[in-house]
Amino acid sequence: MAATALTIDQKSEEFLHDFKRLGFSEYEARVYMQLLRSSPATAYEAAKACGVPRPNTYNALETLTQRGAVMPISENPVRYVATPPARHFGAISRQTNAVCESLALRLKEIETPEDDPYVWNIRGADLVREKIDALIDTSESSIRIKAADSIVRLHSDVLKRAAKRGVNILIVLFGDDADQFRFSKNCRVYLHEGNGVRMGDADNLFTLTCDHLEMLTTSIDDTVAFHTRNKAVVRMADTLIRHDFYMAEIFSRFGSQIDAAFGRHLQDLRMKTFSPEQQDTFVKRTGLKHSEQRRRTRRPRG
Image 1 (spheres, helix red, strand yellow):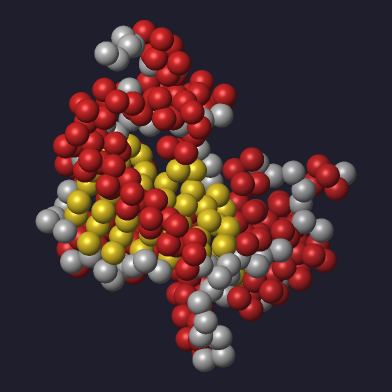
Image 2 (cartoon, rainbow, N blue to C red):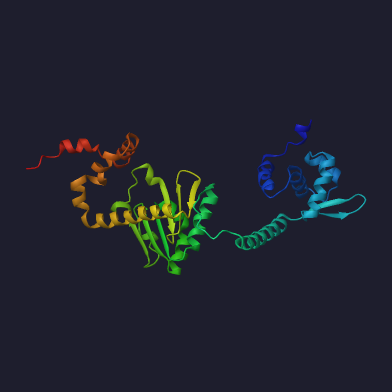
């Protein structure tokens, strides 16, 4: 009978997770949602309608009243109404934000003023995107990105703001239209190796460095990012993007000579170092044959 009593519609079930994240118990969430559906109501009426045991309903209503989520409007019997969600959760948002800002400032006084050497995990697509936007928005001098155009496009607004602030932006792009991200004169965008073709698993990465002080990388097919201020790791990411910039400039000037020497997309060099899986991916994405096949068809010198 208890299992039947606690059954609620699927839409309400989806809300419970978010209620719990805000510190509501399951019973409190159920009672609040019931009062949104039908109020004013007594504790008995709410308990019967939402399937929460009556003693737990009284406890939930007491806590909800203290929080300002519900309000008693009559006596003998006491009837309750729910505070409108926009008003209640808006107040929670403002209070939480104020507490977090105050706590961050006060904790800064006891924080060890050393560089953070750790690599932090960020999980969830929304949190990853928010972190990328925050890094770009707080950058002061330099932003470097190596990524596919579909991902860079998600952050166009914050990149435009950074460009307007005068931040120097360098983007190595996988795609075919570099102009869409040239927001100002201090925003340089280059197609990867002159053509912007993605040809390996590593080309699925989004890599960002800001002010040569911190970096973030994530796979575009995943929802986990890695962020750090570790100097060695940041320097490595900065160097990676800088060398891709060098390659883009070199390809723009000597592309035909490079193709003649090493094959399109540097296939001879890549096939020497790629794993079998990477070789298969390379062949599939570029349509080029294995480099050994290309060599056998090349005319001998002299």
